[in-house]
Image (cartoon, rainbow, N blue to C red; front, side, top):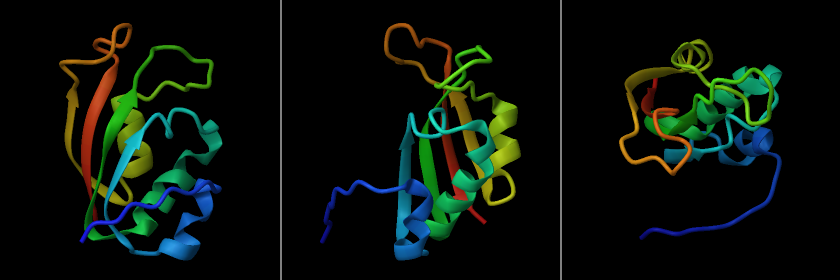
Length: 113
């Protein structure tokens, strides 16, 4: 059966307790909120908690601004940070974004290598 557990913790420590535990991770507004110099560590952590062939799916915000947070996420950023760990199988614009985010979000599905 399915279970759900809520917790508050440093996301970069998840692999300590959940190495290769998950089939799916859903991302929304986490990647854009972390400091830019932690992006590789975030991608590595997400790969670390997923089983081989596990899916990371989410919305990534390309807000077109240099300052943050939230920090801009381009298509190139996705390949740069997640490419070493994942096959990015789907990157497309979202058709039904929240008002103010139209044409600024990427819907992404990637599979752990």
